[in-house]
Structure formats: structure tokens, C-alpha cells
Length: 192
Image (cartoon, rainbow, N blue to C red; front, side, top):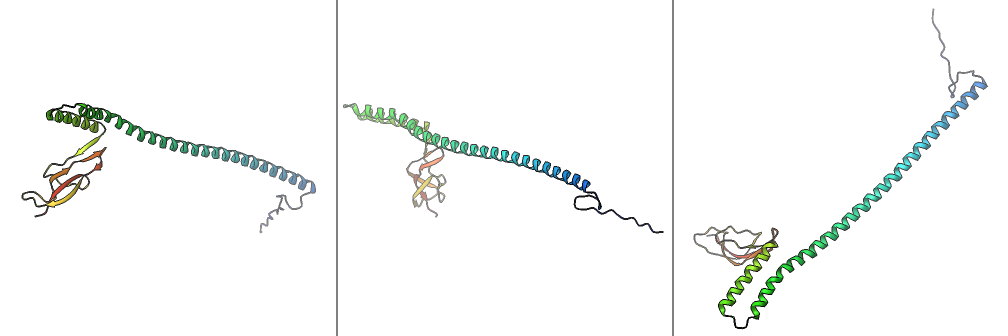
């Protein structure tokens, strides 16, 4: 014996074939209500996303404005720092200028007094330079030539001295905060 079961067929509204008109109307109304509910949910979700998008756009604009303001403030601070750094350095040089003027004001100064005054003024100037991080570059004879801090004027024969070492300093160099302002001018031992 064979068991033939027939599966019911359904129309596009999900109703079994042969459903009455009333069942079809109820199903249609339920379908429309469900569609309206889904549409309302989607519209609410769209409004929520639009509000979030507006909020994020405003946050982005505020962040951009803050970055621009920060950059502008940093530029102003750098400008002020440069201006006041020069002002501070100039202010610290004024006592040196005063000492030079005072020395020149003495009409009957002896050579010894002039020398003492010049030495005192030089000490004062060196103190001002050191306080402002301007340091001498004065390599010792026999030290290794450093192209970052020294400028070789010439190479000279130097018996008993290694090649590429400083023989003599012709002019001291200076650096400020580990940056070379002026390299020391030196003569260098030639290879033998």
C-alpha cells in the first residue's frame, strides 16, 4: 500500500489554495499592517542614523577647529619664544656693553688697567655666553678632527702626530644647545 500524501499548496500571500475572500482580506490587512510597521521601524532607524550622522559631523567640525586653534596657539608661542629668547640674550649682554663703555670713559688709564678691564669684560662676556648655552669649540692639539665641529683650513706635516688630528686652532668655534654656530678653524696633520 502506498501512502500518497498531498502537500497543500499556498498562494503568494501565504494562504492555502482555495482560501475564501474573507480570509484573503484578513491576510492582506495583516500583510499591510506588518509592512506599515516595518516601514515605521525603518523610518525611525533612518532618523536615528541621520541624527547620529549630524552629531558626528558636528564633533568632527569641532575637532578640526580645535586642531586649527592649537596649531595657531603653538605658532604664536614659538614666535614669542624666539622673540623673548633674543630679548633675554640681548638683556644679558647689556652689562658687558656697560663695562666696555666704563673702560673707554677712563682717559688716563694705564696699559695695565686697560688689560685688567678687558680681561674682566671678557670674563663677563664668557659668563653671559655660557648662561645662554653658547659654548666654545676649542679642540686641543692632537685631538681627532671632527668635521661636524671643525673646519680644516689646511693640512700640514706634523711629525709624530697621527693623520687627521688637530695641529693648531686658528679660530675658536661656538655652539648653542649642541648646534654649531661657527666651526673651529683648524690645521690638520697630513698623512705621512
